Length: 106
Image 1: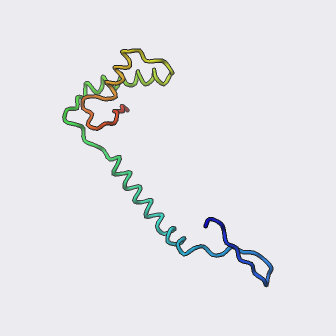
Image 2: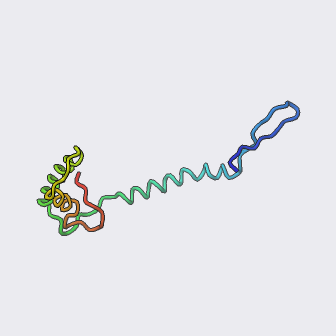
Image 3: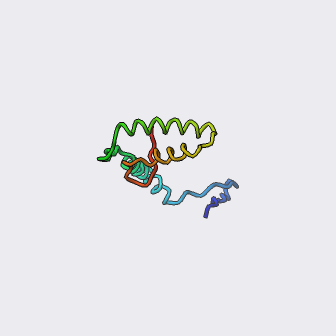
């Protein structure tokens, strides 16, 4: 199925590729629509979300600073001690988190 079919022309003695399937035109027409659907799904998936009702901005700022310090420490290759491991878990899963994904601070 994936091989190219060839035709032999007896008058010129040459080979030429056979025309493509009629489904090729349908596939080429549908590609822009699929791209638009994918773009819409991504826009919906990554839309801004409202903050949870129990969100605390002061605690968020403290957790953000701890997260940045620990992320820099982890990225440099240093090992976490016991306290750093507990803090890392606390800032990744704060009390206002509503889903199972870890929280990421920008």
